[in-house]
Every structure is written in structure tokens, then in C-alpha cells.
Length: 99
Image (cartoon, rainbow, N blue to C red):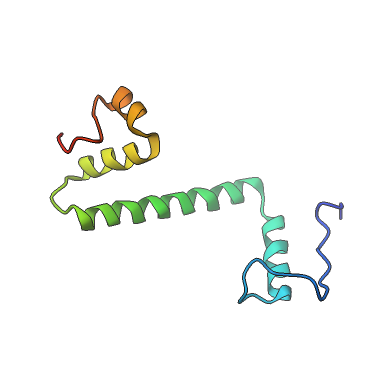
């Protein structure tokens, strides 16, 4: 085990990332994360990104039920890219409500 993979010793000063997680449980989660291959890690990240996108889509759908799926996608794109890039890439001003 290299110094980068060495477990952090659990001492009286050890603080977990989450107040409701025991130091022993956190060490198990860290160990499992370290054992994942780069592909497994990328797959988990991609899944989380899709989940966040789905939440954003559902939130916008709930606030603006009159919009089509394409209009929602365009507005989500504008949130990620910003106004200037959206105007250049999509020929649409996200500050206007038209399209």
C-alpha cells in the first residue's frame, strides 16, 4: 500500500465528512472507492450527472408545464453555457422568453 492509499488513522481528532457517519463506516466507504477502476468511477460520475440533469429537467417542467421538451432542453443548455455562448451556439437570447 502506497502512502496515497494508506488509511487515515482514526484518532480522537479524526473528523468524518458527515456528522452522521462513524469513522469506521467512512473508512469502509473510502476503501471501496479506492478499489474502483477508473471506468467504474467514470460510470458513477456519469450516472450522477444524468440524475442531476433529470432533476433540473423535472424542476423546470414543474415550473413551466407549457414548455415543450425541446424548449426545456434549450433553457437547461442556457443555464450551463451562459447567455453569450447560448446566443452564439443556439441563435437564441435566454433573457427573452420567445422561441
